[in-house]
Length: 100
Image (cartoon, rainbow, N blue to C red):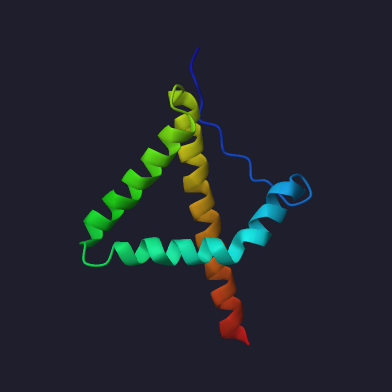
């Protein structure tokens, strides 16, 4: 049977209020951790920064599902999808700020 790539589902707050509540509550800590990790990349070339980020993500994903490659790949795809959401939202907010 041929497999077709499935577009990841994007959760909305009404569907998963408990997840959104956790993220909202921890958002300041999320931003702080992201900034700290980003500082550790200073001094590396852009190529090395990308490799380091991919390695960190792969290690974390593998630790979440150590025995299941399919789940690892699914989580990695979900993380990439979340990055797209973040970039799109940041661009939308930037455009909104420039209009005002």
